[in-house]
Length: 277
Image (tube, rainbow, N blue to C red; front, side, top):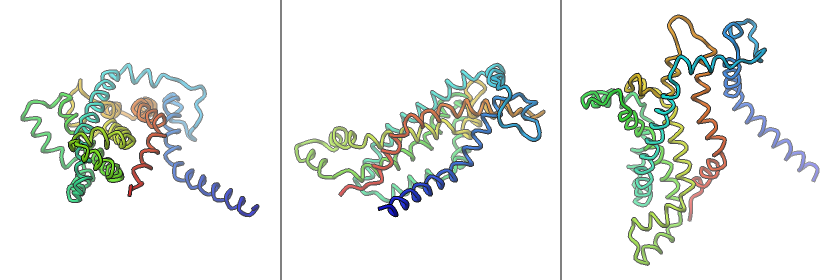
């Protein structure tokens, strides 16, 4: 019994050590970014570098909001991310259901290829199209281009969930006279709610963090937050304090969403990995 407990403790210790080793690079970078945002520019240029600010200051955050219209950029990011996520769910959830029930593996592979294809491949033809339609500089093309990212995520996640649902429940609904749409709406969709939650969160995160589409298609008043961080850079010098503060402003909403919804994400991904009989 004692040897079993020792092995169990050693196994847990090894697991925690492995997790710490995996997350430590990202954690150290994030903590260093917080340190830069809370120090003056003189302290940021000190050598050897000082990790803990003495004393901490919020001047970098005030400077970012004073020099940039971050409230407008935040509103733009919220509109784009929520619109792209909502449209992706509206299209992607039924598409995932149809592909899963039809066992259309070729369609599923096309969705996967679309997800893996770099966004730059779509950017040039879409830019020419929106320029011809005189839509560049508005939020409409940004929302549409973000669907290139969000729709494949939703479809791919939902295919796994719908494939794992017991087919007997839908067959019983169809036998009782329900249409395929009613079976989807009243049987499959409520059971796949964890999958919808995961797809929603992942789509929102990828849309919120996207940079390349907005930097090309957005105008001065329609920039999103990732583009606003890029605009903090100057040709004269890199102000590390304001840059780190701007990056934290972009990261904070997604980080808070992930922390608040972490149980739903884990539960949803776990449920999606278990196939029904």
